[in-house]
Image (cartoon, rainbow, N blue to C red; front, side, top):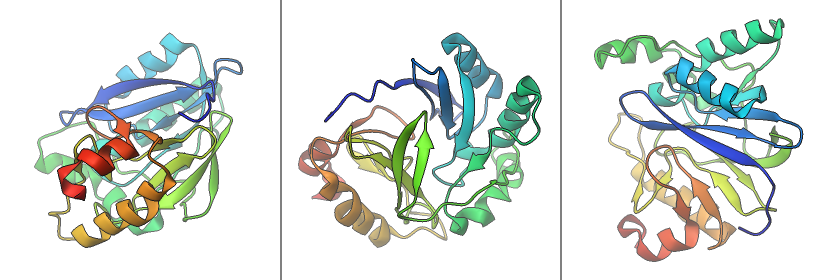
Length: 223
């Protein structure tokens, strides 16, 4: 990592898909954010309480049910705690994932999963924007292929990225959906992510994180 931002991260595996929901906070301000609350909201709230933080924002990398199915319930719970019905906006992903976010409950029923809800972001994201995650600026990078509107959050100072389901340890995101695009996914990885540098550490949507350089050298899907 290029520089220590001082941020803390707790990973909460949620839903039967064991998706990595990330609770991120600044230990000095005790303000934070949640990225990809896919479900199991009580467990996410437990992690927030254990850290003793105030969550300011919820971020979504993309519209799949295991990444966004708990966003609405989490927002309601946090708003009740703060007594503010306008607090804790849901931010992202790119608008091209709107069709996925509006069909989460339907998709969840097909998998036999209860308690997941459609999500309605308070703000969509576009490539080139910057967002504030726990007091640090992260660039928004549009990386389609797994879904049309998937975004990645990247902090250049620390060499740290939150990549959702674009890239994994020794694997890449699925593209065998009607809206998937394998070539677009590979192009996004090779042209947008790997050029950021071999020393960039990332956390992903499932399983352990890695570094871009390690995946460039050893990931069989990138050779």
